Image (tube, rainbow, N blue to C red; front, side):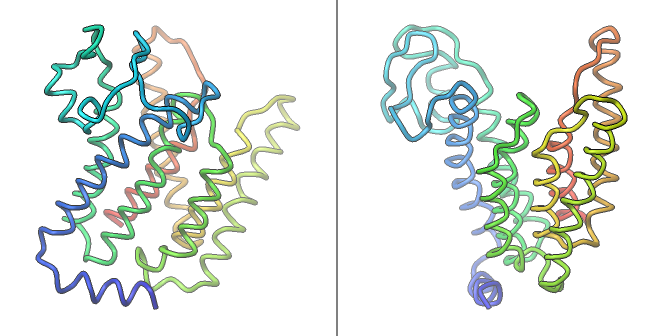
Amino acid sequence: MLADSIGELLAHLPIWVLPVFGALLGLIWGSFIAALCSRWPVGESVAEGRSRCDICRTTLGIRDLLPVLSYIALRGRCRHCNQRIGMRPVIIELVAASIAVISGLLLPPAMALGAMLFGWLLLPIVMLDYDHLWIPDRLVILLAVGGVIFAPMVWPDIETLDRLIGAGAGFLTLEAIRQIYKVLRKREGMGAGDPKLFAALGLWLGWHALPIILFLASLFGIVTAIYRHFASSGSQSALPLGSFLALAALALVWFG
């Protein structure tokens, strides 16, 4: 199997190799995700056109786009217009690198690599859902395809049937809640992307993990709601369930 072959290969590498090289790849992936999450919601393609300053619109060169390093070298300002650059892309780059480091330090090599890929695929979903309450179908499909290929590396003892049941149970559970809420309250209470995401998580981790993921996601939601209540003088806004599901699934992989 692919997971076994990769596991045997990684087992012969020094223990520091996976976290270090994973962190470097994470910085690059995080830079791409930062651009994706900035462009996609406004209808721009990340694959078209070169990166540019959001303020002066000047096209940026390679030395302006090195993850984290360019920000430090330029002291957080655009080389061309000298306007301050937001920290958001750097934070996303560091988060992607941290996913690799934490996975590499907590898990055996093959599981660590699987957890890295899992976390990197979840990252744009977390960002887009948190900022825009939007989970693109294309990202969920990519996550599901990744689950078919790489999920056995994360939890190798889970049978394929359990993963398939997890996909079906994940979708049907949240879709049923979504439809019941819609009938009773006469309005949408959950995005259509959340059941699809839960299905993809079930495909990765099996049906046994779904109750734990949902419980942890609920806790994240409660904490966020309490924080928002006191931080914004009691104002209420919709909560990104998809982000909480994704974070709960990654936490379960790391600490479960």
